[in-house]
Amino acid sequence: MIASTHRPTRIVIGFFAVALAAAAPIAGVAQTSWRFQCASSSHAADVLSATTVYAKPAAPDTSSFGFDLSTAPTRLDKDSCTGDKPFFFSLAVPDGNYEVTLTLGGKVASTTTVRAEARRLFVDQLHLAAGASKQVVFNVNVRTPTIYPAPGEPTPTDGLPEVRLKPREIGALDWDEKLTLEFNGDHPSLRSIFVRPIAVPTVYLAGDSTVVDQDKEPWAAWGQMLPVFFDSGISIANEAESGETIKSFIGERRYAKIMSTIKPGDYLMVQFAHNDQKPGSGYVPAATYYKKYLLQYIADARSHGATPILVTSMNRRNFDANGKIVQTLGDYPQAMREVAAGQHVALIDLNALSKTLFEALGPEGTLHAFVHYPANTFPDQPIELKDETHFNSYGAYELARAIVQSIRDQHLPLEKYLRPNIPPFDPAHPEPFATWKLPPSPFVSTATPYGR
Image 1 (tube, one colour):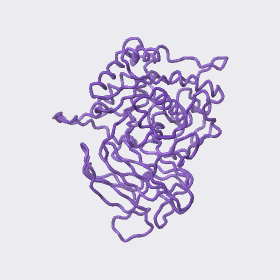
Image 2: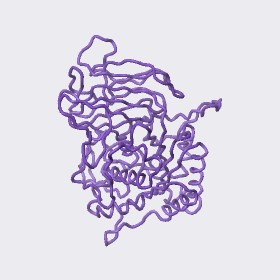
Image 3: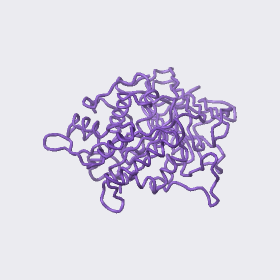
Image 4: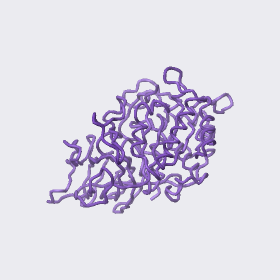
């Protein structure tokens, strides 16, 4: 199941022959589950075909499913379907966590990578011989902007509040009414898919553009790489967004969205600093308000029975003449360390880990980890992309590995949810870019992620 000795593998989807079955209920979700089975031909009314296209349901409680984003598999065999390029499948579901059970494989040899929502990685290049199959299971968090009242709280008479989305987020896969799966790789193939609502611990991520689910290539962040390292005992809800400070995250009601659903046994991982330090009306001083807000996040998480985890922000790509990283984040990493120590909160020191990682890669090697591409690498890209803050998939993946290793080294409670047999990671000896591979998603943007 492991595609590389350096990297974990995850999950997949199938479709066709649709059936509804009873499932254990969770709050706000109907007692239904969804099952799909590939089939080349059938007279059953509930069998999908390559022409089954997803359409947004007319009402929130109406299910819809089908191939999405103008894609579909190109080969349909007796019990499997295969694509010669990436394709997407969507299923309309309410807010919540969903267990996805997929059986991959088909008539031809395949290498399948599966992402969900806005490019959250779950299956990392699963290789299967012709005729073989493999079942995998993972959990996907689905959300909409609506902030529903917590159990026992009344519904506001003037309507439910919503997260204040940025223009780029409106209609995005992380905020729409459906669960979306991307199948990518060399002849991605699947046989079946089963989806059901599930009640499991949730890891909420609060952060900025270096954490968010970046929805288009070549941009990526560590939060969207994290799911591939965890098993089906937990779900990761990446609530981070580009341009956020620890203060604006509250003002845009993203914090309220988390606090409306966070519960005992959950986790809240917090990483801010890149935008907080920028001068202007949104500036959040490290020694005062930054610490104050950190204390609020910690206290509120604990009041809900959840476990806070602080993550210091990774360094930017800034080297001195001797090839050493220059600290550009001021007092923010140290301020977070001090709060973590004072509050007895787990700390993942990604600032220190990234220094080791980037210095190991060096000024030239880090060009492959950050968004640095010559002009015309992508369509409609007449000028060079040269970004010293944001990462591509390789850089984001290596940072996620550093976080996972820190979880293991400290034996944090999250360790029990990590997938078995993840190889150890030493940031001083990262996987060389030349041996690393992940098929890119089909959608590209050369616009820099939103910043304050």
